Image (cartoon, rainbow, N blue to C red):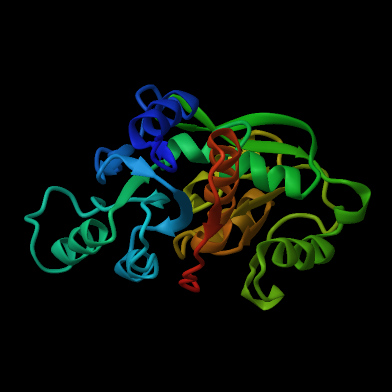
Length: 262
């Protein structure tokens, strides 16, 4: 009799190829790919932005086995002993027979399930093109907004609606025109790419967050910058990836939301 679910090894092999895990450059601490394995099978998929203890504990104690797909994995603080909070996270995964798979930049830039492409599609951008260098790879998506989103105030409200956050949570640096011509998108903490967005012909740039000095970058470059939150802008890719993987392997999936307000 065939065991329920799908082999973890098959899902991992597919994900590694689909996301180009070994090809896409990233931070050394990202450790993209399978970070923690389970007993070998997967009966459901859970998507989340962060591999936090709260995320892992929410998986519950299922009779099956979970593949937890995240954008930010376990090792962002570098090589550390398995003690304290690091130990508690790993112990919680093992207790729940949960495997953990992380995809950072490979998920950001994926053309189908990526954070940037996903948000660009949500906004209805047309004539899209890549921009924004990261370690020699183009990361962002730029394009023309539909007529209904061509005003800055309307874009702010619609962006908040799409991301499920209050409009007041979108921090606007109004350095550019009220009537928008081209929008650039790089989700997460990409405030440092404002100049690249300007150089790519964008008069409006959407990302998650940036440093204090980026206010003057926006004003002096003459570009609108919308900071919609690091967390909120990166809920897109893990959802799209989980849905894609679930359809391919015939598994149920769900998204666990743990907003940080940042």
